[in-house]
Image (cartoon, rainbow, N blue to C red; front, side, top):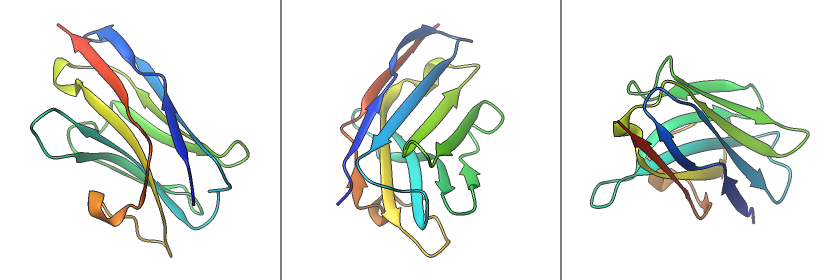
Length: 125
């Protein structure tokens, strides 16, 4: 079992930055896919970014490429999402997720079996 706790959400104006954190209850530094997903009320939960913690290999949704950076501090068992140049369309509940993996990180939310409670990000224009 892995418990995940997100923090760092809040309200910011367009063009601003936020950094989300996700603390894991156990070691996730090897053999885990860690991901950030987001969901707007009434819409499907979508992938934002993923990272394979063994290789630090990353994936980004097209909508956030060049603006967001996912990273993992294996010593602290903490996942981060640095969000720059935020846009109103980035407004959503952001969730941290994890799954054991042999190397491939899916962008499908149903492949992840550990989830945090979510943290709200609101970007005003």
